[in-house]
Each structure stands twice: as C-alpha cells, then as structure tokens.
Length: 254
Image 1: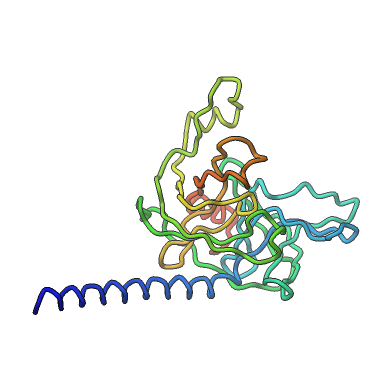
Image 2: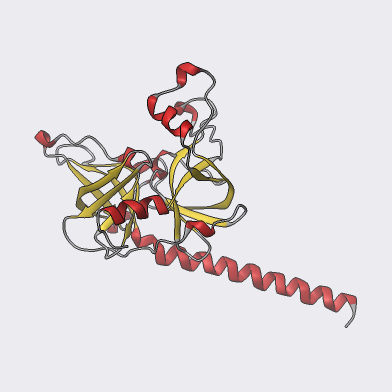
C-alpha cells in the first residue's frame, strides 16, 4: 500500500471516529434532556409566577430529583409560595410541585420529590473511575429563566481532581464552614467548561451518558457582578458518590 493511500485511509478513519463521537453526544442530549429540570419556586401572585434558581435532574423511579442545597429557596408559605421544578422546554414546559426530602450542606446536595407523577430519569455512574482529561458534558439552565425554559449543553473535560477549597487571600475571609473544609477537604472535579449561576445542580455526564458529578460552583475572577461578562471558565463539580451516600441514608433507590 502506498504512503498516499495509507494517509487517505487514516484520514477516513479519523473522520469516522469523529462522526461517531458527535453522533453519540447528539443521541445522549436527545435521550437525557427530558430528565433535566429547572429548580425554583412557584407563587401565583408573582410575575412571572415561576422563578428558576438552579438545575436538577431526575433519578431512580422518576419521582426524585437531585440538585444543590444552595439553590433551594426560603419559601414564604404565608404567600402560598411552593417549591417547584419545570420539566420540558419552551411552550411544552410544565410546572411540578415538589417537597424537600433531604439535604447535605457540607457537600451541597438536596433531594426533592415530585408530589405527583413521574419523569424520565438518568443513570448514576461510578465516579471512582473518573480520570483527568476525560471527556464530559453537563446540561442545565445557565442564568436561570433569562434564556427561557431551554436546557443548554456544555462540553469539556475533567481538568483536574482537586480539594474542594479555594485558597483565601487573608485570614479574615475564613469562615467556620471553610475552616472545616480546609481541615478535611474532599476531592472535587475541576472542569474546563464554563458554567453560570443557573447551572448549579447540573448533572455532569461521562462519555457513556452516566452522571459522575454535579456542578456546584464557578471560580469568579473579580466579583459576582462580572461573572456574565468575564466568566473564568473554571467550574467545580461534586463527585456523585456523595449524593449516592445521601440517597442510601434515606433509603431512596437510584
């Protein structure tokens, strides 16, 4: 076989591999999108009545939802405000009332349960197998409802597996919670894909479409006010086994 022919064969194989990878991601997005929900609250007298504060994803039998603890709002029950999630997209979006089942503030995890019905669910993977440089993607609602009820997919890699602590410039910035983390930090996934505030709680998928983590914070270079105009591109995710531990404690199948 000539060098030219070998080169043509190699190029052809690369194109086929690229096409297969692209097709796989397209298929994953189509399959997983129905399980991604917007998390917030519903208040009939508010305009709009639904607020979106973060992202969640449906697990197990289709009744339970995982998200970040920090996106759960303080509910004003006297004004008939209720915890809720939104499934579907655009004009087909549907509001579901939910209840808070469990929280873990240390690992920033919350479990919600649908009051009625079930939704398509995702599969939780094994984060012990995750390697630096591995391809990942996550889905959610960046900057909440400003872009409408349309979940967005971001793609990247696992940049690093690092302690879930960002060094502080001075001792005055230390809080009791941060001191506890400094004493006993846990490994988190650093991603090179940019996330925004509404992505809190977004599921991080591996190439096979299984959840290996959950977005919980973005490193901000300057201030919270500049996160949209000057995103850092450094996102952190909690390994999914911490959520699995919480589910096991409350005997919730996943």
